[in-house]
Amino acid sequence: MADVAREAGVSGQTVSRVANGRTNVDAETRARVLSAMEKLGYRPNSAARALRTGRFRSIGVIMFTLSSFGNMRTLDAIASAAEEAGYSLTLIPVPHPTRGEVSVAFDRLADAAVDGVIIIIEAHLLDESDVDLPPGLPVVIVDSTGHDRFSGVDTDQAHGARQATEHLLGLGHATVWHIAGPERSYSATRRRQSWEETLRAHGAEVHAPLVGDWSAESGHELGLRLAADPAVTAVFAANDQMALGVLRALHESGRAVPAEVSVVGFDDMEEAASFWPPLTTVRQFFHEVGRRSVESLLHEVESGERREPSLVDTELVVRESTAPPPGA
Image (cartoon, rainbow, N blue to C red; front, top):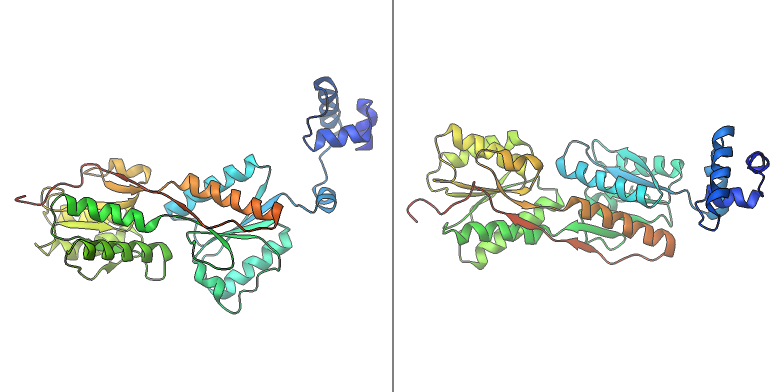
């Protein structure tokens, strides 16, 4: 910093102001300082800045999988929001979210020196006895708002499932079959519970849900079972990828969509509008979930106070995969 000050003909304090993005430096002086920085190859010392401010300007993210549509969209939004706030990201994928691996992930983040952590895994793992969180470290959980120890941000899973189910019932279908996500998934559980509650509220028969693993392959396998039952006229799949597998199974079985069977998904991935037929689905606003996650975490980092849980609304997007049942 002293070298830059000599090169630019300014004080060390002025160099510090420019390096830290302060606005109380006139444009000509700022340009001279930046030119000197570039000439000398100067970069602010992040370690020294952390010692001075108590902040590392870094956010840790622990994520179960990088392969799912929702996780990647949420991570992209978190990265954008963090960059806008002047923070970097340290990502720790946890391929198999066992209690031990989650603890190891936190240990790695502690070594990486982060100001707080955003978790995109199942929240129940944090309640297990061998998950030891660093004391005082702010934590925000994505896809859960029911945790009593940490802030949470989630899509309104229940509202989305209710929208999907009521849409199909409103078209005249007597009931709706459900292909659910994994049993230990919080999101899948909330969608399944809301689907069942909505059917019961409307006096419709509730058939046991078929459980998939979020993949199109599982949707196809379970869809073949539903396609073989002529009583099935409406299917709500817990995500768009399983809905894609259901569409394939119905096509292969000679069941016309939507003339014989209507299908609704959940997510509104970009490709959903290009399925055949284009998929009616529940849109999640992943960018808003990511933005609120970063906002909530930084609020706790700066104030020491947790924010209330935050739910992001959903929107039903009606396309050509749904219609009244045969004979209606």
